[in-house]
Amino acid sequence: MRQISYPGSFALLFVWSLGIGLLSSSFLAEAQESAKPKAVIELFTSQGCSSCPPADKLLGKLAKRDDVVALTLPVDYWDYLGWKDTLAKPQYSKRQRSYARARGDRQVYTPQVVINGVTHAVGSRKHEVNAAINKEKKRLARSFVPIKISVKGDKIIVDLGEAPSGLNRRKGTLWMATITNSIPVKIKRGENHGRNITYSNVVKTLKPIGEWNGTNQKLVFNKQDFMEKGADGCTILLQQGKSGQIIGAAELKSWL
Image (cartoon, rainbow, N blue to C red; front, side, top):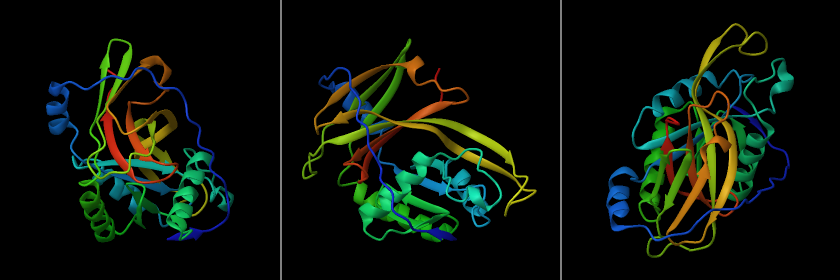
């Protein structure tokens, strides 16, 4: 595990949302079946970190489970070690630091997984990661908001459920992450020199696309605005505050 701690700010940009409507009873029934609570796993990793390949491999296995949403967010703060991560973005490093500040422990390291925006664990330690997933699934059962994402023609439609009883109805941020299912990388320098590593569910872009106020909402977007080159689909995350608990998620694994 390679650790780093340094200050940084994370600016969260809110953008417009389109259309608000009541969810039909048919959607609610479908949501209970297709939008069951899932633990969201964000792996902060780096091609320049020798401790990361086992975590990258584990994330690939977790991505195949139907009870989790697994995401890879490559960070850039190890680029000075001799190899510039070809997938990393400063935004993901800022997101990781924002989580650490919100938790109050300021623990920033690779490979680190953050589950549901709340609990962190060393990404290569399978038992530790599974324990954190189980812990967060129990927490999520009390705060889960059903989300459904679908495509109709050239539109992406996101239906958000209502806050469950007892959940703080403060505004939440709706994020859209465009995802590439698998990216093989041959690393030519640095600590992982000569290794070929495959990264799973790599986040190409992560953008706030609206706000949620605790009530049923319907949002409609132009599909072409989110179809990033090389992205296979997208993931929707509903998060409380700027870097709080993730209380809902949905995946669109193909744009079709």
